[in-house]
Each structure stands twice: as C-alpha cells, then as structure tokens.
Length: 371
Ligand code: GDP
Ligand code: ZN
Image (tube, rainbow, N blue to C red):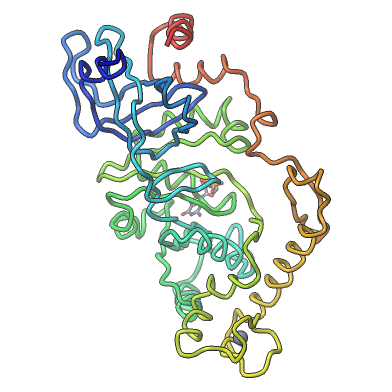
C-alpha cells in the first residue's frame, strides 16, 4: 500500500462546497458541521489543495463540490483531496455548478435601457444556465409603467420579478426563486445588486462593507469571487461589474438566445439550414417582433467579431479580441493568462486570513509551503 493510499484511508473524508478561493487557500463549507475537541463545531474549513491535484492540473473553483481530508485537528485546516464532477462551469465569473443567473436591472436611476437589457439577456442566455430577470426600484415608477414593462417583457419571452430593495417589496417572491440554488447575480452597476445581496443576507453586511473598502477594486477587476449563503439555503455569487457585455457567440447561435426567435424556429424551419435570418427567402425568424432589430444589430456585431478573429495573425492568437463601444476592434491580453493577473500572494493570504481566521499569516504561510 502506498503512503498516499494509507494516508487517505486514515483521514476522514468530508463533503463540502468551496465558497471562496484566494491564492492557494480554499474556504469550504461542509455539508454537515463537524465537532472537534479543540475547536468545537465547525461548518467552515480553510483548506489547501492536495499536491496530487496540483500535479494533474485539477483546478478548484468557487462552487466546486469537494472531498476534504482533515489531516490534523489541531490546526483546524483541511486539504482538498478530490473535486467532484461539475454540473456547469462559468469563466466569468469563475464559478462551478451555478444553477442560474439572476439578472438585475433598475427601472429608473438608471433608466431601463431596452438595448442594454437585451444585450445582458443574450449574454446570460448564452451560458445555458436558467435565467431569472429581476427589475428593481419599483418605488421610483408608477404602477402603470410597471405594468407596461411587464407586458413588454412578457412579449420578449420573460416573466420579470419586480422588486424594490429600498421599499422592501417583492423580496419574498424573489427568494423563492433562489432557494437551494447557486445563483450568480449579474447586471449593470448602480441597479442595486449590492443593496439586494445585503438585504437578502444580512450577515454578509460586514463582509461586503469590508470588501467595499480596500478590496473594492480587487473585487471588480480581478477574478476574485465569493459565494454568500442565503438564510433560506442556497448560495449567491456576485459577478464583476460590467455595463456592456461582449457578444462573443457564433452568428449562427445568436437566434437561439432570443426566446421570440426560438419560439418561431420551434414552429418550423427556415428554407436554408444556415439561414442567418436577415433577408433570406422563407425565413421563419424574420418578422414583426420588437427585438428583431436588436437581433440584426447584435448579428452584425458577432459577424464583425468573427471576421476580425479570422484575420488575426498567429502571433496574436494568445490575445483576446475586444470590441470597443465605438465598434473598433482592439487586442487585449487574455485575462485568463496567469501572468497578466499577478496579485501579491501575501496580500491575498491576508484578505482570506482576515476574514476567517485569527492565526498569524506567517504560520499559514509556513504551513502552505510545507504542504
Ligand atoms: P450596484 O452597483 O448594482 O451594486 O448598486 P448599489 O446596491 O450600490 O445601489 C446603487 C444605488 O441605488 C444606491 O444609492 C442604492 O441606495 C440605490 N438603490 C438600491 N435599491 C434601490 C431601490 O429599490 N429603490 C431606490 N430608490 N434606490 C435603490
Ligand atoms: Zn431564417
């Protein structure tokens, strides 16, 4: 029997979900709390990743279901021994096993812009996760306007949930859609996402407050992501703020990200199997629906993007194409690439350390190096 097998047999394996990742540390919420003599009841364990996972290149993401080995009760730290198969995986924000996206927009302040909403909806649809549309700040509009938006969005194929975080309206209804799921909160800035998370998870208040101070920049510009636990069960992930998501899908896929077009295609096929639903004869999709003009505009964008990618010289293949608001294309380094997102290891350790533990940084640092 190898030392490795021996050690895994000797250890208790616990099941849990990774709720935060920073540098080489993983905060794991155990499915069942454990009781230890030295530390009492523990539901959260700060973990590292077993060397054999590193060797096989197994990454650990927030949302991952993991098996944890607790080699030493004295220091209260675990080691992730195995990552269970993922049901879903998002790159931005990097979250495994998310069930749905909660897309939040405000009805006013900022005024709801149908084009921007459409762009976010298409982007969210392209993830293939369930989509829940939530419109905030109902306190700022008249009920007749709310009804108009309701009718308009129903025609788009959505059933929006109207809320007001400020006036405490509609939140109970919203919660029923989030219970026992991993939900990613997305939407432009200023619509009330942070206010909503604070309201739904009062205990997070302090942590968000902490984050909005010195970590604010980090939170919105790096791939740092954390899951917050809903009191009713379920986890929420905040996504980095962006106001104008890129449409990076294939032109031929685009129609499937519009429920109105999907519905038309379900009724019958276009004459040409590669129809892009512009001016081709006998097209099922072209027609009198409000967002058809959005479709055409976004289609142009995806085609322009595809053409620019095809013309991209080889040496730039490691760069990511970015479509600027002006329609101009520019290259920017791929964010996925490690060398472009170096963050001081020590500072990352500090933040996680501050949040969860009281042990000194030096002690943790030594442990990780020894692992
Ligand atoms: P985020 O950028 O999406 O996270 O938005 P914030 O949570 O920071 O909220 C932006 C602004 O909208 C803040 O001034 C909030 O107080 C305000 N706000 C949030 N929810 C509501 C609401 O339901 N009604 C009104 N009138 N204001 C709200
Ligand atoms: Zn067509």
